[in-house]
Length: 528
Image 1: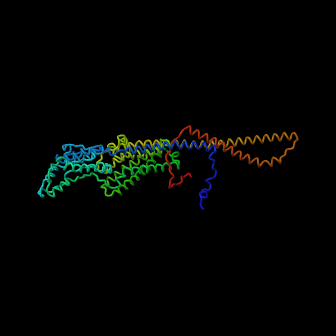
Image 2: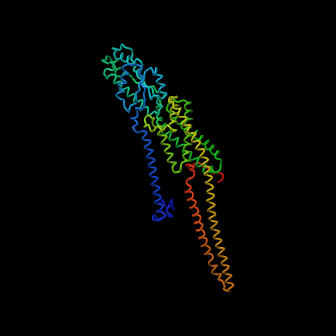
Image 3: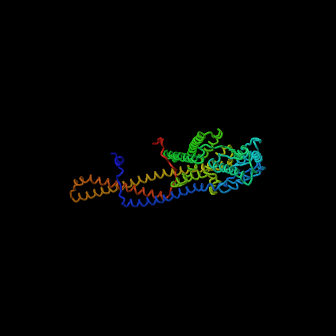
């Protein structure tokens, strides 16, 4: 029967007893280190969880920060009903209705432009003459009045491309709720609509449905994949860049690039490779979005523009992660990476209007800026945030590029120092071995000289020398000397190694060469 011991026969060899003094010392050091890192990592992830959950905390109570402009082009009972309905719904969990004069927005096109310019999240308006037409339809007897159009009464303008799941729930659904409440207020609110009585089936049908709220959606975005544009897509782009960064670092170490080539050449080649990788990666991302857009009305120009901005975002993150690996101590690089991911994701989960004001620091996150630019592209220019979004993205690109190039020089410097140190350490070990061997040779020579002198003295005194015993003892003595020499040599090298390690610890950590992964496809370097 197959057993673990038969699979790994040497797994139980050379085991040390748990009460061994060396193990006791190592055990306490192990648990102290495990406990310290346990605490640090728990605090880190607790902080990250609190940060991301805090951005979503009581999201509904921040809905009043979403401004919706109301323009009553009618000036009649329907507008009064809308105001009465808003008075009953007004609160922290309902968007703020901001009434403006028709003179501020002479036409519905002006309202659409205001929403397009993100001055308001939506615009609600009552069409001119709507109240009069409704009163005539309710007062008509026997169908003498002209047919009543309940779709030409109240409408709202909005842009679903801006945080689609959020505006669906917090803007569109609440406007629908306001319309329904206004319908009730019109018929029951102290004679708001001057409704005294109705007669005939047509009037009753009008009273049952006095209006049908119309939606003017600047960019309909109803496909299922819209839910991950500002979550999973961002995460995967960040992870994609991180993994290839580890690949490049692994290749650089394997082929000893930093200790062989000129830093400028390394920086140029490294950035060309990362640009090509980000270029192809962003093409794959936007192509996938397009492949699953499910009838989303986006054209080829928007495809190319989205590709370019994702390319910029991907490359700036590649450089930023590279900067982390260069300038942070190796132990803190994984913590910085996960913190960077959470910081970026939190900046695009919700509009800042629905999060506490503290989270506006997310304006500095590249993910927030790329999402603003993408929604601007997808909605045909109806999210004009380019004035700050593109400068921030390019600032990340340029600053990270400068630090990354400087980091190449830093890595080359420490790589050269490292190879020099390795040669010195190897030479010290060789010198220690040679010194020990020379001391042994001098000791043997001294013993031979003394033996010859003793033999000369004995011959002068006329005493015979017993050579048989000496010859018989030679092999055993030679083997003992060999074992003793090997042990002394090992001790000498161990002393040199321990001293070198302590000197390195005193000098502190050098340069971090970043995460490095074993490559699935690997080719041997020329000097191997």
